[in-house]
Image (spheres, helix red, strand yellow):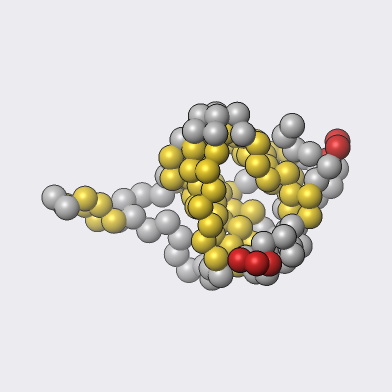
Length: 128
């Protein structure tokens, strides 16, 4: 699992500036909120690459590169970016109230939100 700990690029009396993503194409940016204990994801995208930036809170993230493959797990905290390449199964469970910006490149966007989402069911789910 590729997790980037973002760093502040510039700071002064007004506040700071931080690059979240650089050098990657983005078609949509979506704000996702979590209540404590909420599970989201448990899906993958055939064509869409997803970069998730944790704005606040913390959560468990699980990834699986392919059906039946090993499952990677990490605790994500505010400031982390995790990338889910196309075809990578992913799921989240909030350890507290949390917010995430999901930046995607591919058909999963706007009115086509579900067009490139393959839901995991039953024993395929990464988090119940």
